[in-house]
Image (cartoon, rainbow, N blue to C red; front, top):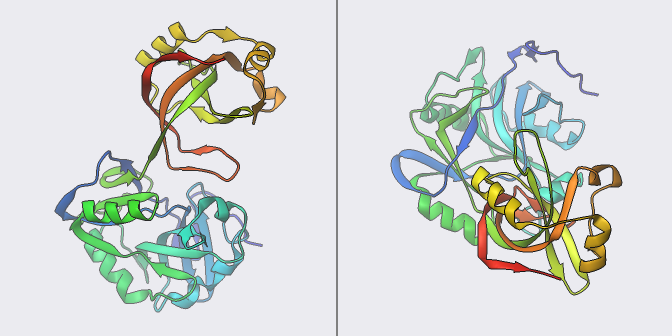
Length: 313
């Protein structure tokens, strides 16, 4: 079993690093000073490879090789080392990258490599992105389970349209002359998500410290009642919190069930105490990356109110 390294120590003789993070950005763009690549929907990981030895470190400094033992074969794709590779662990089902499938512990996964941070005895984080991409092409070959992320120069809009046509997560724009800022969120890397949008019912809200309202409990309505699809707090401004607090009509859970009918996916009993249930209210607009197989919104973001105020049953 992989031993968890202590903070600040080395891994396989190389310095332990944290991945550089991309800043959110609203729209795709074209610019010849930038490279664009697919935003992969999986687990971010740094791979430390020395000879036949491999250590996979998660973004939160947890060992990933016990969960994905087949990725021990990453070493076969490294022509020269030791190296630290930055990439994403993904799983494919039905011809598309599927994060929900990845969480179900599939037998076959891939490691998509998009950066190299260390080579031989040299740290490469001070090199430009172009220089690092060159080193990556020299020392890593595409061999199962390793896939090398391809880049597009200057044409972010076209790549985004290609990604959207295949219902993928989004793109990442990276400034060509940028250095690697380990552990930092930087404007030198920008992520543009391919978000879906929908209108949902509000069935309640859960207060949180420093917020007037907190997170909205949102649901879809079907023939047999409501089904809760998640909680939304990201993007919910203080102004919208005030407007919703003036509009929403508090109910007990018993009153909600009596008036609205069955409600599926209710939170566990211990979590219901923190929820103020309300008379069902339609509709709030929410952007999200996908609906999971168990009927939950992934990465939901509040976008606003839709149409005129309208109350349900």
